[in-house]
Image 1: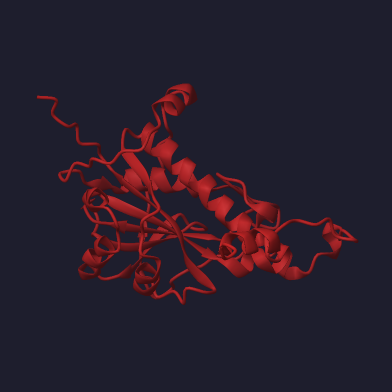
Image 2: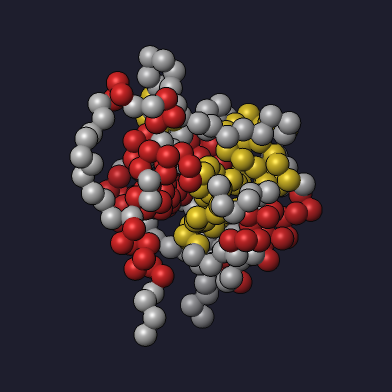
Length: 250
């Protein structure tokens, strides 16, 4: 029986304590600088101030679950999108040098390799389309025409996911993490995507929306739609968001 590929990855990415641990003062500049992706030629939509969740954390945690039945009549408002993005992945504290180190989730070494894209199929008060979340400015940047939306639906494996109001796609800019942590950094990227996904689950629950994490996304198709090379940056995860459709028990 051939050795499975995952075992090679697991072995190569095992952590070993380095012979010499550099102090923070000795770190190269690329380890300390936080990078942000932007689309300067795109139309920018300013997001309203996010609305904080009012439910208790106990209620949110117990209520959290995956939803696979979405209302096709549900539309996403800018306020809901703002709250989803900020409380799931927004910046919550900056350093004195304005380096934006703290966000709503942990990141190994504060490298923040994940970029977030929102594919909005049914928008209320703004245009349907594909947007990049500019976390630094808490804005969204429209990066693809509305006609491209059906191609994202075609990249989803399950029919029920195509009824969602929106997709949120996580891509990884691997060098941000691997430059510091080597092969081990790839593990950290995937862990970080999981941290962010759980935040989206909890925030969606607080906003009385339904969500499901998606393993069935055609990576290469979405990479192409987002104009990613699939190597230095590629899709690693996604979630479908909408309003739950209550099924009849009759």
